[in-house]
Length: 88
Image (cartoon, rainbow, N blue to C red; front, side):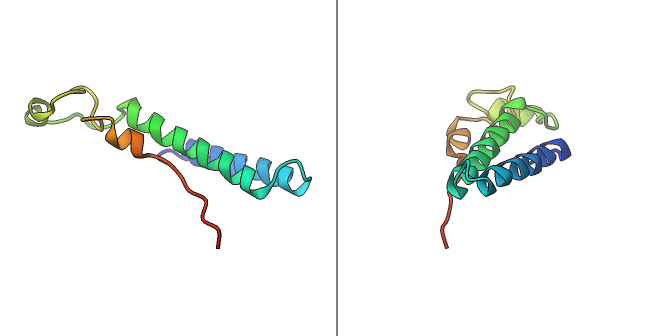
């Protein structure tokens, strides 16, 4: 997660969800799912925000679409963002 504010948001979410797990209001898996979904949302927001250094003119010419969005030539990368809970 790119920003310090984003990382702090995830830490606050973790603490809040841990409290709910301890109180029996959520399962651990439910809490992890909520954290994973928020992380995915934050990454996708970062990709679509276009808050990056400008592209070189030759790169813009080469891009077929989304010429003004640095990380989006197609939506393949955006669609690939996800999470998985791995049980050990």
